Structure formats: C-alpha cells, structure tokens
Length: 608
Image: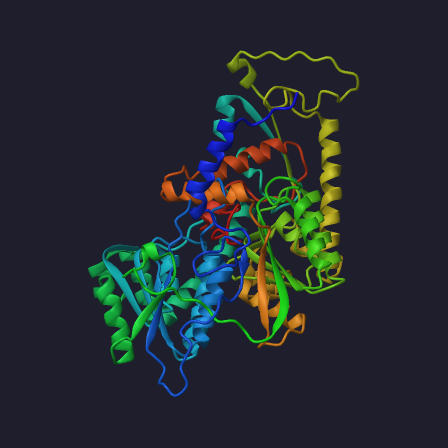
C-alpha cells in the first residue's frame, strides 16, 4: 500500500515554502557581490560607469570580509568565495571611479594561504596608483601581515593585536591509549612518514622535528621579510616587537608605529581623505553589509567584459582523499570527465586542499585530471594543504601552482593498527570467535580489533605498504617528468613548503588561485579582453544550502565546538584501521594556522 500525503501535510508544506521562500537562495542565480550561492562567478552588469567628459569620482570601495561561519560541520553558503573576492579586487583596479579600497577585516578568518593571495591581489591593485586602507579590531601575526600591505592601517580603539609569531606542534596520545586499554602498532617504513607518531610517541621524532622546523623557517622567514619591508622596520625592531612586546592595545600599537590611526568609521574616512587630499565623493560596499563600517552603502557590482569566450571551471577538491567521504573522488572524477567533454568549458582549474587518505581515491582524481588534459588544459591550484594523497591527486596536472605557505609533498605511505589491549576488560566485554582460515579473525572485534598483528601478518602489511609506495613514487616521477631515482630522493614522506616544493620541482610555480586561473586562460589561448565565466564546482544541493544558511544565521562563529574537524579526522583514521594510506598526521591542520574543520572548507571555498 502506497503512503499518500494528506491534505494537512500539503497545507503545511505550502505554508513552509511560502514563509521561507524569500530567504531561500535561487540555485540558478548568478553570483553577486557578497553572495555566491550559485557557485558561479561572473560579471553582474555595470556599476560606477564613468560619464564621458566628466572627471573620475573619488570613490572608495569597502571590502567587508566578515565571514561568520557555522563551523566545520557543514558548508556555509552566502559566504564569499576566494575567487569572488579576487575578481572584485581585480575589477576595482580597472574601475576609474574607484580611487581606493577599505579592507575591513573585522570578523574575518582565513588560513595563511588565502591571506597571502589576498595580499598579492591588493598589491597589484595598489600598483595601478590606487590607495589601500586596512581596518581591524583583533589581529594576529597573519592578519597583521595582510594589513601591512595598506597605505594606512586603522585599528579599532578597543582592539587587540597579538604579534606572537608561528608555532607548529602535535598532540600525542600514547599514554591516553594505554590508560583506556587501546594498543597501537605503527607500520612505518619511511623515515619522514610520521602520521602515526601521535599514537606511539610522547614527542617529536628527530626526523619530524627537523622537517617541520624547516617548513616553519620557510614560512616565517617570508612573513618576517614581508612585514619588515612594508613597515620599514629594522631586524632589531622586528625582534623587539615579536619577542619582548608582542601584545598591544590600540593606543600601544599606534605609539609603537604598528598602526597609523585608532578609531572606526571616522578614522577610516579621515585616512581616505588624507590620502586623496580632498573629500571622498562616496563609498560603495562589497561583502557582508552587516559588518560594514558605516552601512547603507550602495552595493558594488563589477562590469562585464566585451566578447564572451566560454567558461573556466573551478573544481574544489577538499577533504581526505576518499572515494565517497571527504573529497568524494568518485564523484569528482566523474565531474571532471563531464567538464572535459563540454565545448563551453575551455579549461579546468582544480583547487586541492587535502591531507591525503586513501591511495585508491587519490589515484581516481589524478587519473581524471590526466585524462581531461587530452581535451583541454588542466591546472592544479594547491590550497593550504596538498600533501601525501593530496599531492598524489595533483601529479598529472599540466601546471601545478602552490603558495609559499602550502604544506605539500609527503610522498610516502603508512598504516597503523589499533587493537584491544585491555579496553574490553575495562568495559566488561568478552569476544569469542570461530574461524576457518589462519587469519580470518584479522580485524574482528567490537569497536576495534580484538588482537594485535602477528609476525606473519605484519610482514604481509609491510609488503603492501612498500608496493603502494613504489606506485606513488613511480606515478609522481611520471607526472613531474622526473627520473624515479630523483623522485625517490624527495620522497620517504618528507614534507615541503610551497617554496621548497618549487625549488625541488614538485610544483611548477608559486601563486594562488588567481594565478592558476591566469595560467589556465593563457594555456587555453583566451584573449585578455574576452569575457570568461568562472563556474565553481561541485554545487551544493538545495537542502544543504538551505540548512547551512539558516544555521549560520542563528549560531555565531565559534559557538559550535572547534574540535569537530579533529574528531571527524580521528573517526576517519579508525575506520581505515590497517589500511596503507598516503596521509598526514591527525592534527596537522590546527598547528598550520588553519581554522578547525578547514579541510572541509577553505574560506568556505567554492562559494558555499
């Protein structure tokens, strides 16, 4: 008997849709300033169009970067994607009526890779002779580095600046596992592949301490050099600010010369008028108007190009490399194949942000990229992390772009075996098994396997890991057009910054998503004046969009527990118990300056 919806249910559904429809984003709607619900980024019609014969107006664009998030559980639509922000900055640089940008960083949170790319885009904007004013209320070393690109820095008069530097660390759970009765066998055969050290040690191994120290030196050295140049500090001044003073109120920061003005709206407008030497004709706003310094500004919209030349598809590959969870490479591989077959799509840019996971899943994506290149250019843009399986997924791209801060490499494979070592007894659980086959009980148990591996079983696992590793090295060498012997010297699980990866031939160039799009455009032979639509994939479903939008409206940023990403990652590793995996340590993201759960969303990447 079929179930039929009654009249009452139909009436309820009608009322529900009627009341909430005005706030539900149209999935087919093109992206607009501050709203990327359709995951399509294109020009939205003229704004601030100059009138022939009139002098350009001195208008400033407020770029409100407030990105209130609902946490790492779900993707948040309505937040501006990185691509949309870069496009607005680029268009503002070409708009003769825009004299400057007010960079409003109140309530803004992003990883170092995104901040670096935004800074580069703003430097290009300034190179056209225009001005930049940065405003923040609370900032750390990374946000201050972004602000240092500005001609004037304005700090909220009750704000805080913590210039404390960079740190990397790991959590170690060996004693905790022992206390609860969980055993852990590390199946590690490569010096630098350390993903399971968290469960077998109480501190860094020498190899780990060395490789992460080199990574920190690379990225901190770049930040130090950038800030010193921007603010004309000597090395002595930098060291004093970093190591002796480090924590500033607004008045203290101004007295020390870290910021130029203290205040809010009046201070920002005063800074603009000082830079222009005249009153400002008006302001326009792009982004979240709720966080606007003044509010009520007209919304800034960018202009269309001239001749339409097609689409560049931007495919976001975020999360662990898994066929159906995390990155979902089964679907992504199919999606890339579909895009490769569309005449409208002239090039594909794959934005990878992944700590690795399943070797099979990583290879699915790698092969999809390789096959797509037979019909059009494919460029990989590495996000904050594209290491281990995340690097594997990248290897066949026609061009790989990484930021200096990208955490990459880690060409290696490892496995771990969690097993009962007293947990069952503590919980009052008994396990009794019947088996046919000497190893049929391998992995059997409640919650975790009931026993450790024996010598023969570990030997077979060792062979499996070595075979997978050889495949990884061979494929990476083929993709990078490098002798296997040379790739082997770079492998063994060693991690690299984007700078070191470029120097060693693991990536082709340093840059961000904007640079990758430029390279894709050039490889596709698209004229610089032609109009291109940038579509971002995969697109969220209707209910995902609806739930995320309304949850983010009622739950302030930071109110959802920040360990969601950690617990999700732990659950993933337990579910992959005993699997040979190209993967990073569990809590690498948190200490690399990435927001909790950021493997699932990079600045809510993809316009979600």
